[in-house]
Amino acid sequence: MRPVWILTTTLVISACANGPTRRTYDGADTASPVPSKNTGRSSGNPMAKNEAVRRAQALYAKGDFKNALATLNVIPEGQVKGSELTEYWNLKGLVELASKAPSAAEVSFQKAIQANSRPEYAGYYQYNLATAFAEEGKKEDALRALNLVDLAKMDLPDQRKVDVLREKVMMPSGQNTISAEPVAPVPNAPGNPNVSASATPEPYRGPVNPNRIGLLLPLSGKYEAFGKKVQRAIELAFQHSSNSHAKDIELVPMDAGEYPPTQQAALKKLVEEQQVIAVIGPLLSKGITTLSEMAEHYQVPLVSIAQVQGTASPHLFSCSISTQDQAAKMADYAMKVRGFRRFAILGASNKAGEETAHAFWDEVLARGGEVRAFELYDPDLTDFRAPVDKAIGIHYTEAREKELKELAEKRAELKITKKTMKTQQYFSLPPIVDFDAVFIADEAKTVGQIMPTFAYRDARNLPYLGITSWNSNQLVARAQDQAEGATFPVVFNTLLPPPETKRFYELYSSTYSTNPGELDALAFDAANLVIQVMSDRPDSRADFNEKFEKISDVEGATGRVSVKEHRCVRNLAVYTVKKGEFQVVQDAEK
Image (cartoon, rainbow, N blue to C red; front, side, top):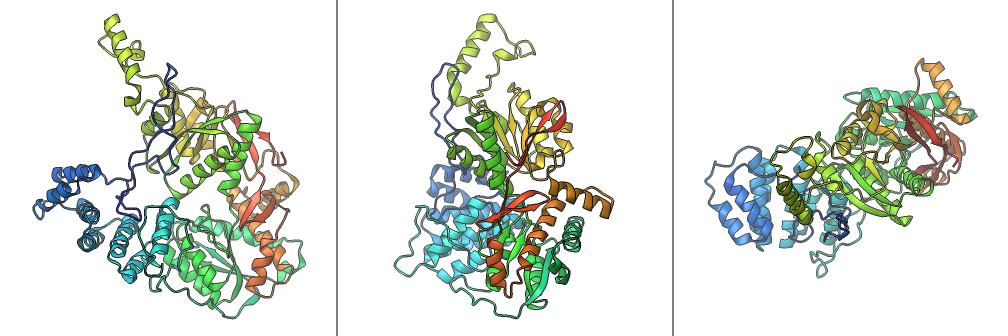
């Protein structure tokens, strides 16, 4: 669970996730409005072990800042230790900020940063510190703190809040008021912590080799196998292209490693030393925001095959399978073909999960449907009873007191005192399944645990909708019969392959003596799009960028590909599970 951090005022993100409106069995609506898309997980401090800190947390949550601060101040030095020390100083800073004492909060947040041993939390503490500086009118200090925030380690909604604060800090004097009103996000300042966000650096003007393409891939470390797999598919596309110009193009692989700093160094080398006209990569999502900022500075096109698309940039083309395509395909199939209107949405609270879950929500609303439940859960979660219980209305029991009372009366009437298999119906609330289908934005391995959890809670035989990564034998192996009827989009349709898919499959298999997968197909297609642009002989990076934007209806291993709004758009096939086997229920042309 991540630490508390603040909005652009001294307010804390609400930890009270209101559920969608639900109907109880007697037909009455419970008093819980449709949630915002940012609900579904707690933003609060992890519950402290130290009793005094716990009391301070509770007082802070109630808005009793005076007593919260008094409670924190009387804790003896040395009593709070380890990771809890970080949360102590962060909480103290939040209380001080809420008490209109930003200078004191600055000290506390700096101590939280010093005590922190969790890199994934560092950005949140830096954000809190930046807000304290902003409250004091210390613009340069606030920008310095914001430039130390690694946006790649934050969820998309949180990235936007950082952007909002940056925009407000950069406003001219007299306009720079910290407001609770949400504003549209603005592009990030360059991600170099040594560059002030208040000044946009001059675009890079170095030389360009118009026949050289860079490959920004992890060729060492934890993701080496994936990087080399992608490199192999790209080289295959260039070696076997029917375009005569392909053989004149030089590919320059550069090891991006597994961490953002090595990615950034590799991109710098590709542009400044190798003088490439464009880059295929990155493959990893982590650090993609900073890379897109660097691409804008260098004016170099990045043809990304990373799963997460990153912040919009005029030089970043997202050519993996997009969340929008998956969400649109599933919403279209569910509502037009199956006739579903009401949905429950679950997803992991990471970038990919949130982006996909929110995209599906948007597609459902655009088609006149309803979202009846929306739950995000910790990506490391292994017990899914809590998010499932929230989705089916048995977690928030206070909204169903009438039913609980009726169960108690029935037990008394029947003289039932012990909960057994035969009597459990008189102890447990029945699920409220007021939706037609469940969309789950997560991998097959995890979904294989979530589906049986619904059944365990007596919500059986539900139609499940998913994403392309469900195309894995782990789905049926884990979920067993609960996966029956599950449907999901497919980008690489090998069950009923169109001609170009079949051609690629046979070429790859005969060349490398192994069968290709989705990643190989995506990399192969990205390379072919680059080849098509290079066949027009672009003489500058700007020329390449302009030509890539105009790509339309190119047949590839993953079907027909076009580029719209800087992402590769495809029509997808739909698979379903029938008797434990995958079957095509809709091909990509439908």
